[in-house]
Amino acid sequence: MRGLKDKVALIAGGGQGSGAASARRLASEGCKVVVGDLRLERAQSIADEITQSGGSAAAKRFDLADEDAVKEFIAFGVDTFGGVDLLHNVGANIGLGSAIQSDADVVNLATDVWEQTMQVNLRGYLFTCRYAIPEMLKRGGGAIVNTSSMASIIGMPDMVAYGVSKAGVEALTRSIVTKWASRGIRANAIAPGQVDTPSGKLYLEEFNVDPADVSLLGRPAAPEEIAALTAFLLSDECPYLTGQVIAVNGGLYLSPQ
Image 1 (spheres, helix red, strand yellow):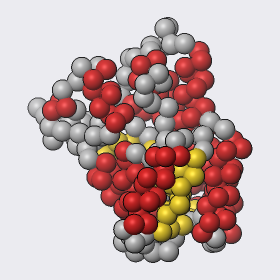
Image 2 (image 1 turned 120 degrees about the vertical axis):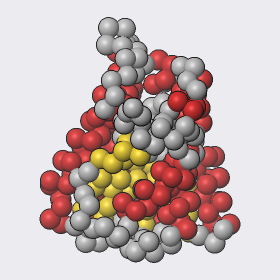
Image 3 (image 1 turned 90 degrees about the horizontal axis):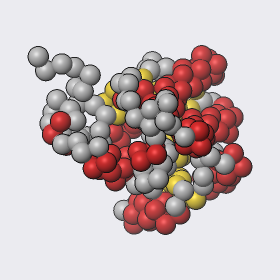
């Protein structure tokens, strides 16, 4: 894709699933990739895979909920590859003991679960954008892809914190565009449906959902399908596309009737 070769791309949450797929795809397009993850071993594994395939990548452990750690993550990208051009936020508070198993309805949701979910899913994206945008401006602009979810549109009765956090991600994305579009910053959000990732499988198991029922295509998305959209949005293939939320969910919002 045009405009990706030699760009420095930071993946916040790139140790597995869609984030790892995006790291691989962007590296294959010629990007220098910084894989950030809460677990260093996951990030390092993806970075090693990329470098062994002839690409350029580095790994950094950081916590989206920790502003200082996020600042260090962005600085690591600058120190390692000379700057920041692209940012993909994909990390989320989801998995065992977090959004899927502890989220609930408005009446029964524990306040600490709400706070933790907002710290990672929304405040964490604020922090990555806060420190990445000034670095992008030094290089004449850049592009951001934030990961939202179908939960921002579909009222999920037992995942209120997760859904609200993802709706906030969409508002954050639009705010970035209205402020910095004139200075070369593009930002879009993607709203995946069910994706075949470890956390996606956990959701299906927790709520006893048949994978054939998660989309009109009768299957979840492959992480590589989400990564393909991410790469397109970060590329120069359509520079007029900004400030949008793009659903990639196998037709989930449509009625088959």
